[in-house]
Length: 351
Image 1: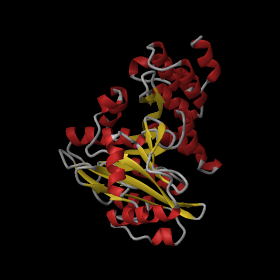
Image 2: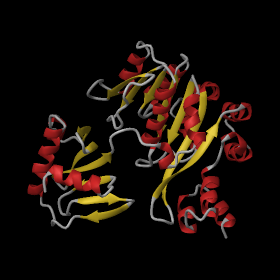
Image 3: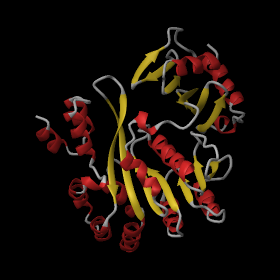
């Protein structure tokens, strides 16, 4: 099969990922399960032409691959879709995993992204953090938030992504999208440059280390609305992760800064429904004076109780969201228990 045939079959079957790995047939991930092509097992000699075709299609040099490094980039094919690819070596042979991204910005209603998540984009300043494991849909949620701003407000939105997944057309806003390692050397350099480019909204693809996190906090203090992501599983863990990268003598100051800057923390994961579809589940923290005090004083263990008490304000815990889905018979008991943060709490509530 050619690359075009593989990509077309993936999009027609609603695949989210494509695996090109020697020793396996072409494998598609569809609704969380693997479907293997009937065209036979691929050998290293079969993979190499596909890898070359990927680089040709993406107009990308194989510099990283030939240097023994992984490579991560994206490309578009007219009338087919946009694709994010990671090329790597395993067992001495080149392999690739391709993420399928449909053209256009997804409809948050169809995806199940609720208003209490999307409304965080209505803030004018501060930090909005979206957390979750890799592949949990963070980029899609952020794309929907940026699109909401683009449709409603006159802003300069600057995104820093690795790689760019969703393409935003200029609407009411000007949207400048910078791909790390192509348009800019890295997140840190791009973030520092963005502050000289009259930004109103900044999307920082990931808060990875001390320098990036410190610069993101500084940027948010200038009066912009800054979105970013972390690989954490709860609102408390997200805030702890940020604080913990700083030396002990700076953590009190950082908690004070976060208390003033954070507008919301969204944690999400994808879970299989009883109908066999993947749907997002959210934990949503929004700041109010009580939440700010907990962050400032480091009493993050109290956040779950505060979120449960403030459900009328659009807050919810992950376990609360899972329990709601279970009570509506949208997910099974096993799925709820496997995805919850507090197993003992969840097992008692769903007996």
